Every structure is written in structure tokens, then in C-alpha cells.
Length: 336
Image (tube, rainbow, N blue to C red; front, side):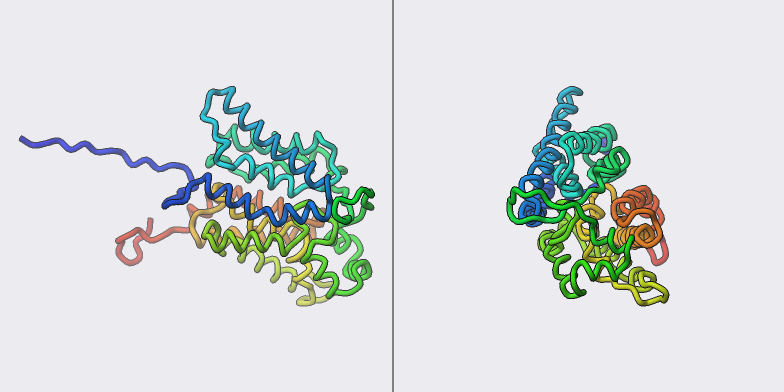
């Protein structure tokens, strides 16, 4: 008598496809930990305002996810750390001088509209923190572009309003930027340590690179997106970033300024919204770098990292579909 074998359908879940001992929760909390050096530097330079803005973003993100899931009787997923990470990243992308209601609105947009309404973690099309920031920039453009000079640790004096290095470079040129910082050596130094105006978490390049190195060491991110992103920015800045002639631009200024390091290592590498195939990730990074520099050099904004990543998020599924891979065990030339 023959025994009928029962077959089970192959169920393919939405990305990220994480295997091995690592869990989504462990990865998310590790990324939060990797952002700690940059957050501490934001406290050093901007004092209580950094803590205030970031805390508002994180608390609103966590509460929004809890209330949304509770009201729809869905599984509560706060322990995975993704809501906390979204709030933290949003806070690190904001100026320190915002009134309380702006970070709250941004976190709500990031969690409820961008993440949960699309089905939760793994189903969102765009990076939630960047959508939250884009929403705030459109809704409160003046407040989102007022920058403060860094002050001493938890100083009580009000910091002076100033422009970011990229803003000075775009509006007044390299000569004015060097006049503000003295010379290129001091400019590079201040950009590295974070003693300049900007968003809370993007100022200290050294702190961000420490966290990025930790994630690369743990294997939570790979070099493909961030290095192709940074390499494209450097190349375009060198070729087209100078005045009057090709190959006279300063790529170091563009690499160390704005939200490039934060975006390249911590947001463009988001598992859900970037391509999953390595070749596709390189294309994704090149696209992010090219759009960033197009906006910086020719657009109306001095910064372009946020817009570049969001635009490339749209193309991530198409890139994955277009970059074919060899089937396991297939003959030469046979493609998926």
C-alpha cells in the first residue's frame, strides 16, 4: 500500500530575510547601540536641547506603535527595537532648536503613516525616519532650517544662529567657508569632531564612523551601499565641485559635511528599503551618491542625502528585479 506524501507550499516572507542566530530584535538594538557615540556627541555640543528633541522623537515613536497595534489588536512588537531606532534616527536628523510639537509630528508620521499603515516592519516602502524628516521639512521649512552653533557641555547660554558648512559653501563659496574656519586643516578637523552647525546626530563624523565600523565588524551591514555611496559623492565632488574648471573640487568637504555619513551607513543600508542583491546594492549606492551631489551642486537645497535615499528607495525593487543572479546548480548562462 503506497503512502501518500504530504507536501508543504514554499512560503516566502517579505524581506529582510535574516538567518542564523541573529534576530531582528538583536540587530535593531545593536544598531541603536552603534548610534550611542554620535548621540553622546550631540549632548556634548547641544546640551539639554539634544536630549529633549531626541527623547520626544523616541517616546512618540514607541507610543505611536504601541497605541496603533493595541487599537487594532495586533501583536505588540516594541521589544524588537525598530520603533526606538526610528525615533532615534529621526531625532538625530533634526535641528536642536525645534519646538516640542514638531518632533512629535515627525515621529507620528514615521511610525503610523510610513511604517504601520503599510503593514509594519518589513513592509514599508520608504525609510520611516527619512519620511518623517521630509514631512517636517515640507510642513515647517523655516524651523527645520534654523541652525545653532555648538556650545559647551550643557551650557545655559543660548547659541547663536548660523549656517551649516554646506549652506555657507553653496551660498557664499569656498572662500567664505575657509574664512569662517580659518584654513582647510582646521575645517577638516572641526568637521571630523563635530564642532559645526547641523542636525543633532550628523555633526561628529568620528563618532558616526565608530558606530559604522562596529556594524561592519558584526556583519550587520556590508560595504556595498555605503562605500559606493561615498565613492560616488567623492568622485562627483572632485570632478564637478570646483569653480570654473573640472577636477578642482574638494571631495573631503562633501564627505565630511551634512548627513552623508549618517545616511550612508545607518539609513541607506536599511534592510527593508534597499536592494537585497549585492550588485544591486552597489547600483543603489551609486544612485544615492549621484542624486546627493546633483542636489548639492545644482539644486535649491545645500543638502541632498535625505532626498537621494528616498528617491532610490522607489527603485530598490526594480533594481533587485533587474540584477539577475545565477540559479544554484544551473548550467552556465542560465538565469533566474
